[in-house]
Image: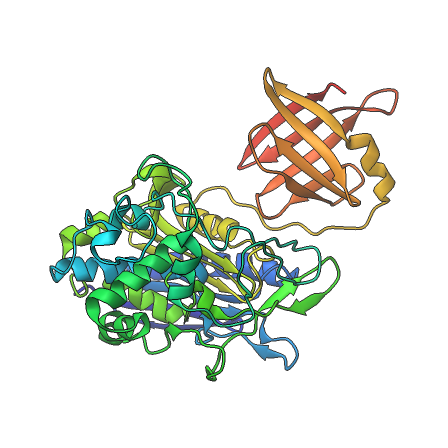
Length: 465
């Protein structure tokens, strides 16, 4: 076994314990300080609250809490704080399915109907298609509407009351009368409902509850004693309270019953426990190596079995984000480089830019370009009117600037809109993308173009109306 080297950064104090070659210490300390300074910059601006772990080759470079687990009692986040991990849960559902495959209880090519006789369209859908979000199954969470600039409320057009408990059977019953959204296997469309059906399959084939199966087959074998299924009533010691950020306030997250997320979400964990998960995935402790490789084989839209497979800063990355009313999370595994980044936040998924933070933490390790977050200022919103319009980036590619509810938004052709925040009267940014835009005036004082900066690249678009 390789020697273990650990660098802890906690409460501004660097503690150090090691067994290994001393020549690497200076580099690790330097990288650790950069990682901590970067995350702290988000916490200082009120953009992040949570815990972060970064490790490379069994060396923990950063393991620290930021902000508060409870802002009313001013209790700090720590590496032991338990967070709702959101859709990172899907990795554990996927692992449980693969363990059943290893036991010979099912095949990924099996139809759902061969296991669950009462599941709608079960004869058309395979287990593999549920895992890869290619089944066409409607998503019972898709219709939730959420505006992070307003108060934390839940608006949905489904038949679910998210404040009350639901069962797996309730969710399967909901989808019974819904048509498939496309021919199974032909497209990718994220479906939380599909992973709830997978939880039902786990229960059916194992004869155990989803919760008990995960505890016995994954959490206990790995020593993940601070990981489990969220419930409404039982107390969970050291659990983080969720929060929602508005323009001016921090509010308690909207209440919901976690049972609506079973299979697709609803697990809690800590950064330290998820690091145990990362280390186990390099071994055959849970499943054989050939089955592990199937987890990370991308199908449509770069999605495997509970993992998204991409390249970040030129390095292969296996990751998944999670987000809900009380959390924003990400785990990133660069398995070719033996690097793991885990970010768990108790700010909601529209308040904490965990994806950008994860990318930038990776950039620090790989020696690539990254940027610190920017701070917004207040300006006269009547100035926004001059910026509204169409800007031509190149033929058939437009940048549209819109004003809505006294807020400014940018949208490129074929992309979603992102809000712009002012750092001066003519310079704007978005910390989540990240993106900076400057509006340039002509001799007559009118806006003639914009200059943008994103991912280390500059671009210019001429105003045409």
